[in-house]
Image (tube, rainbow, N blue to C red; front, top):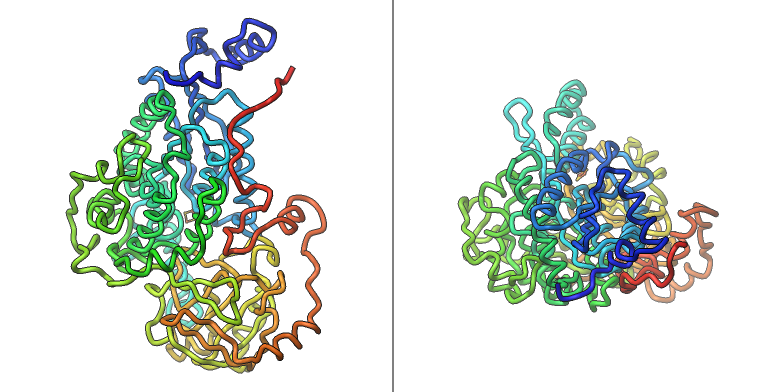
Amino acid sequence: MTTELRSRDWFGPHDLNGFAARSWMKNQGIPARMFDGRPVIGICNTWSELTPCNAHLREIAEHVKRGVYEAGGFPVEFPVTSLGETLLRPTSMLLRNLVSMDVEESIRANPIDGVVLLCGCDKTTPALLMGAASCDLPTLVVSGGPMLTGRFRGQRLGSGTNVFSMSEDVRAGRMPVGDFLEAEACMSRSAGHCNTMGTASTMAGLVEALGMGLPGNAAIPAVDARRRVLAHDAGVRIVEMVAEDLRISRVLTRDAFENGIRVNAALGGSTNAVIHLLALAGRLDVPLALDDFDRLGHDTPLLVDLLPSGRFLMEDFFEAGGMPALLAELSDHLHRGALTVTGKTLGENVADAQCWDREVIRSVGQPVLRRAGITVLRGNLAPNGAVIKPSVASPHLLRHRGRALVFDSVEDLAARIDDPDLDVDENSVLVLRGAGPRGYPGMPEVGNLPLPKKLLAQGITDMVRISDARMSGTAYGTVVLHVAPESSAGGPLALVRTGDVIELDAQSRSLRVDLSDDELARRGQSLTPPSPVADSGYQRLYIDHVLQADRGADLDFLVGRRDAGVRRNNH
Ligand code: FES
């Protein structure tokens, strides 16, 4: 052991505090030898029946425990607030930072020497990483794994992506509602998180790219026995990491984040990763800026052909070799020397990895797209930036001029979008405001605005859409997101009026409204800032302290690393 275990402060002393720490734990049937100085491993669990993607994590935790015991550690599982995308209102993103606080304070306040993070559904991965990063103990992530491929009447169904496409089919009269309801159970047929390259799969992939998970972590299906083996191995490895004092800050370096950005591009990963990586880097004082995503990602080829950008699903990706195969193929674009939780470098981890299906994981020589990545837009409509994911956009719309049709809120959108008299055509630019971090609050995934029913009926499948919101990683379209500053923070999106002409040019990274600076200033003077939608409670704290999207939408007072020291005892 190279360092004194912090758990000895709790379990070591032969005094009142030591007695209390040991005695009450013994009421769980824990033998005295567990307090003999072996490392205490926290298993931070986001299990919840209200987070269906993580509902199997109690079982995964048991396999982590087996590994911890095997390696001579003492495992202790503890719950933190869980976040499920499909049930939480107004949006799970509002609670990501709250959960990160829960994680950080739970780790710091308890006799924990190293921690395994069990996560799966979208926000659970960044929330747990952010909280653990602020404590800086040895940390290893075990993801819950994706669901099996959905199947409906011979058709493969991808989580999320096919919900969007089928719901548009219902609205356009192409699919009976009865079929739509029958497809529900067909799409979600096993434990696990979304099986498309949505935010959950993206973040699980980035866990490997960042060096925070064991090789193979991202893609093994949730119900596959090999995920239990990986969890067991993680339990063994975290005990070794404590002995090596291999803290999260030694893994999550600038090089690791650069790898994450490039891998996100090669995966065709979610735009949400931009916000989560910025927030995570902020917790570790690693310099990372919005423009890094464009600069580092734009010359990275798209190699993974998964929905929503492509054709396949996570089960196919697993069978093709998963993240190790992708990382090996992409290795010339990566910092191969970045240290990982295995104690080896990223390059060493994947040195023997092979690809078994070049349709799913393409070679660098024959990519899906030669230049992928997320494009960062700027201009008088987004002074601090906005993002677009060209791989899911319509190429002909990436350079577009059109009349704005403005919606002040999601309620306004819902009330008017299907109005037969709506003054809209396929060249219009749909604008939604009031959906940013402060304004909603919580920056929901509503940026892929539904198309007007009357245009759907004409066979229109995509339009330029702009908002200060986010978009589900499973969604697609020519969608400009994360406009900063948001309208509720005085951003120019608040000044646009229906009929103004908006110009998007993704190639030149420009997003502008055809208005002079004087006109924008004049409109700004007559603008009344909206009142906060909450005047007390956590939501008010969030509104008062949330940073804008270009800074990761963390709370300003959570930025930075506070380490795991506790200065005072409890008795
Ligand atoms: Fe949980 Fe998609 S809803 S990962």
